[in-house]
Image (cartoon, rainbow, N blue to C red):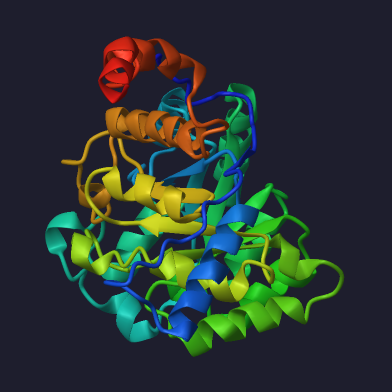
Length: 348
């Protein structure tokens, strides 16, 4: 049995070590461009460093508008091994059109108000509440963060100066809001790219490259599919490689924001190079609200943090052909080793 790995192990960087050259058999011979691309991919893998996986527990509005539930969820996220506990901040009357604000919630069963606007207002925590949540995070040793949806919300959260602020997929073309984050804030800005074209992603990165100082190196770019929940065939994990190929030297890091079920996909995302992993988090998936069904409960989040840490430990090449722990097994089990005298006698 493997030893238990702590989700809160000390930060460490794992280099994958010297790569093995690709083998080109005659049956699977590559064209020259394909072979060149394979060599390039291997070289990129050689240079890649698997840093400590970081997990964002996206509480969002799963607190149901209650500060004490929000604090409880932070404590549960910390206990599970998360790096960050994150909420959301909106200004509903600024964000929504009058028609949207006054319309009924599309799923009345999950609504906390007579209209969608009232529903959103009910779930909003004040900036004073967010300050209390930030203080609670400091007390328990968890990073606080929030996703901002509009300019007013961005300005409010910036006053708290958290280590990172998130821009969700719906807001990643909101330039006035992002200008606040770029020019009036110095922390990391994490940006999801769900329901976003490749041209729009390029606009995001260029916008940050145009910022003063080292703005672009404060950006973490996430691959994401915007659905709740997302079926496995629509997760599209290989988009992580596309972001790496184009942006790994233009932003600080690449992340993965998942809305799927289970935790197997997250492990694959890390193996593909996503340093940051964001998952919605709740205490009870049966609670009222639209995000709970696509959220992890405490036990699931704890397993995810544990498994990501185990995966980081495993992401390396063998340092020698026969590892020390293999030597005894090789001598005892491998043909030509345990019966070397007999085999050599036959050859003689």
